[in-house]
Amino acid sequence: MAARFWVTGGTGNWNSTTNWSATTGGASGASVPSTSDTAAFDASSGSGTITLDISPTIQTLTCTGFTGTLAFGTNTISLNSTGTIFTGATTMTVTGTPQIICTNSSATLRTITPTAVTEANSISFRVSAGTGSFAITSSQSVRNLDFTDGTNPTGFSGSFSNNSPIIYGDLKASTGMSVIAGTGVFTFAATSGTKTITTAAVVFDRPFTFNGVGGTFQLQDALTSGATRSCTLTNGTLDLNGYTLTTGQFSSNNSNTRVLAFGTGKIVLTGTGATVWSAATGTGFTYTGTSRIEALGPATSGTRTFNPSTTGTSTEATALNFYINGGSDTVTFTATSRRVNILDFTGFTGTFTNSSPTVHGNYILVSGMIVGSGTETTTFATTTSQTITTAGQTLDFPITFNGVGGTFSCQDALTLGSTQALTMTNGTLQLKSGTTNTVGSFATTGTNGKYLLSTTFGTAATISQASGTVTVDYLTVQDSIATGGAVFDALAITNVDAGNNTGWLFSTTPSIGNEITMRLRSFTQPRRF
Amino acid sequence: MIKIDFIINGFSDCLHLADDHGLTDSEIEAMKQARYDKWYEYVTNPPPVVDEE
Image (cartoon, rainbow over all chains, first blue to last red; front, side):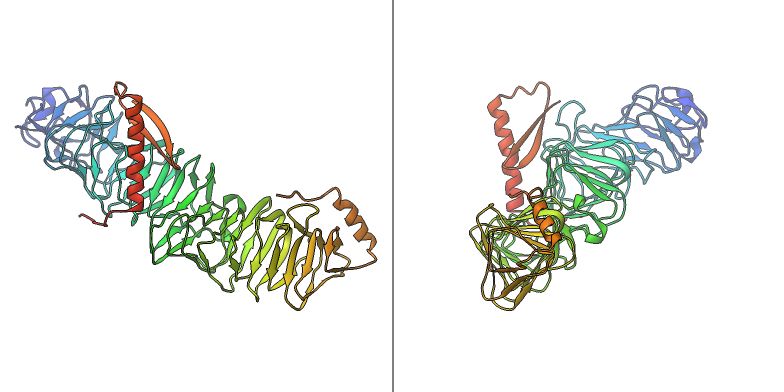
């Protein structure tokens, strides 16, 4: 094995004996490095441009201290040795399509030290063979990181070490390789274009961070990480591309521009005893496709915390669908005003503690779970339509219906705790026809019109309050039986008796405004679901 | 390279096969099921956490 050093100090072709020396800064004229040689560019190599006029195979490549340019064009450099096979430099520049192929097929450790080069000066690495470990020195950057032979999904069949690479390009795993579990973070940092991630069914039990302003990171198959790992979206677009992303926790808690592109894909959260969803700051966040976040949480104890966006930093349009479909532990939403779309507990058998979510989509409780009591208010706030399924559970906390133009359709009897208030502020509440719905107290707020109906026109639903006086305003009532002991005072002229009501006290002499409202009702009958 | 998307019980994944893979349809179906089974086992019975340095 011979060492070769670039010494011309000026522009030249790789495949020229005038450019190479046997010693650093020595006389030129040495042979061009070949398969048994090492090549080095260093501080004595000048700042010229080395043009790859061939695709050489050498043992190792070292660029420490080099301030020139390595012009790849469409050629590649193959490194066939083991140990530290490549050392880069932040002072050098690369052009063309820079790619280094790591071809050694032994079981010996190989390490590359590309340094923390910029995106523009990053080099792609393809590890086409080998059965040992392959490592990238932590916090150092590459462009593409490809573990295949370039044609087939096979190639490298060793293990990728627990380091923290920064990847500006694509990541492609090979079938048969493994990724060592650990805390070394895979950071994807491209700032333009679409970069792809192919896992080839390899479990990446590692944290992932997507942090490239303007970059898109697109799955090419399912991405599976471990239950203790976090997937973080800091900047850019994470495109699930219809596939399943499995991670312990998901975090996107900042104000940067970032997009979760679900398509038909989903995120599966397997974390337990932790904050599994952390995205309180909704500023800058949007999603596309149909959001679906499933929380399997196969735990029997501990608490899983969900911290979706606050109502102050998000909108109904950015609220996500959560399916808490596993576990018998405790699930809680961070206390104040978190926004969700669908909240579905089908499959959950644990305890859902009282919190104050604003729910825009379907709300589904199940009989096998425990619904905690408290004073935090759950707000139903669709501006379109949503269903509410309580499965016989008592909601021992206040609830509010507040969605302008929204319809809240109960799929079964609604039962609140004996001290809990049901407040209507906006929208249409459809109680399940033929059921008795029990509240601690019933109230209306605000001066917008709101509607209390049953789910089936002409078939009443019963609302029951044990005592006191229910005084409502700006409420149109239809197909409602009021009972239970309380006085249901709808005497204010802002209320409308739209028919088939029992137990309500309406003004016997409707105002003109009231009559007009009643006539208009025939044209504006809310849809029933 | 050939991509074959599939969904099993809500798990959405993709097989990447060589152009000349030579696999039969039943073998491909078995690969899909194996991918799902591996994922399901991993998420429902996660292995102990071992962080290697």
